Length: 149
Image (tube, rainbow, N blue to C red; front, side, top):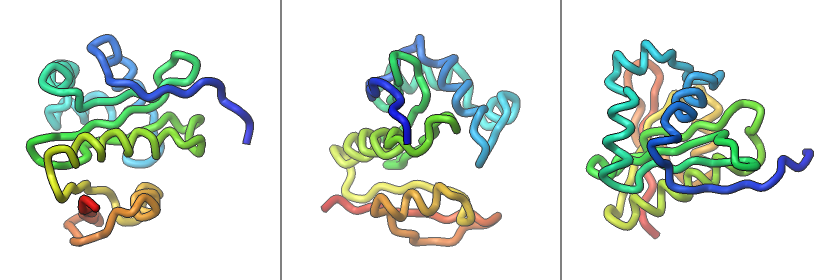
């Protein structure tokens, strides 16, 4: 695997919101369009509000360019999102983004959770990171949990 340059994980700012939406709508698995995200209530203003309340969104950069992000919901104790541009998968960025989200949530909760499609590559990724499937959900999703060690 070739080197991709300097990698950084940092807290997101309002200036990152367009890149966050570009990354989210570029993924191959679990793809959602801008319109679908809006219908779900995931809007630039909603992300702006989340960023203003707590450091709950992180951006992965390569050479200063955002290529991934993760987002945690403190009140619900869940990892809400973790996405990396397809061309930057396999470089450890997703693992680093998840580590930031998990550490943040574990500061406030002993058990954290997330949901994803059971048949997705993400499901295997989360298992590899120590997440445990605890419930099969409708429409082929699965709920994972992770407990504070």
